[in-house]
Image (cartoon, rainbow, N blue to C red; front, side, top):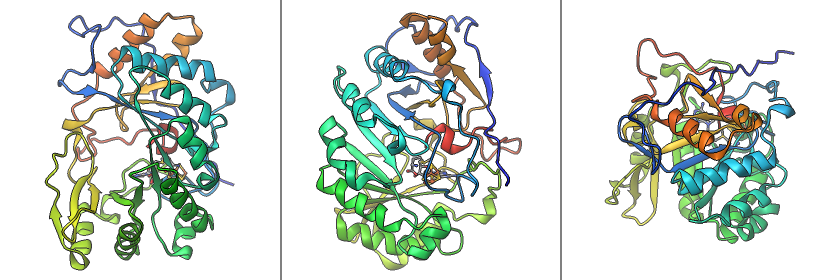
Length: 354
Ligand code: SAM
Ligand code: SF4
């Protein structure tokens, strides 16, 4: 059995002094003037699917339990982010966040913070049918469910698990629980993806879900991504435009990664997230916390800032705050995927949190 090692990027121990011109209060800014208000929290690196573009069939070496933030540590960092760093939106992800025991309690804790952030979840949808109501009651606002194909055989080929009906049940439960707008995230297969995209959009229009199609990025654990083997946003747009009337959505895009198109005159929209071919790094408003307590200022960062070590060394909130600010201050201008010297991060998507 081949088990792909998780690989841990260079860890920055943040005892080096922050830059003199870095703001010590106010919003979480970087040297390019971007402000991070959206926190992505990976609750676990574990998953019950094995999507080919994300994880190998055999799974990964999961993060050791002692490395994971405890509930108290997690809550302390979430509180700091909202009350001292200007975070207005918290999205829980993974790995599969529904595998995190106590997810409802963490959601309720964040919902009790002031100013109350918006709370969202990105999930593969397995088990959501049972938990959507409790999550909504705990304070969850919105959900994105990942779904790449409506063909059961194709779904099983992509995820290596025969769970399509669970995902569809999860979607409808989320909608019934008021976790809207319910979004569907799709990463398309290179061969069947354009047909899948048309079917997914028809399905989403029928049920009132918002489809977001994401270009596949070099974040797979096996480092097998090849630019020319994947569908581009332009190809996806062209395939959808053959079947639907697409017009540019007039709403300002802001920091949203998806370019939105109104479908058949609206109000329904479809979004295409061209992370690779038309990068939107200049408008990025994200900061990321991994399940093992590392701050990443970008999905593609080569460096992390170890808040877990600081927490366990007894650091007070001002030290944690300065370390988090320093991590974001050093954010690069862009992800660099299209640079000739681009190096894929060692940590895969499932351990970063998408
Ligand atoms: N397990 C949950 C799920 O699948 O929704 C949450 C974690 S998953 C890493 C978050 C999102 O990242 C999913 O929508 C997934 O499709 C996307 N994703 C994973 N690997 C990707 C890749 N190599 N390129 C683009 N998106 C990817
Ligand atoms: Fe699991 Fe999500 Fe990765 Fe698929 S994309 S293997 S569901 S973490």
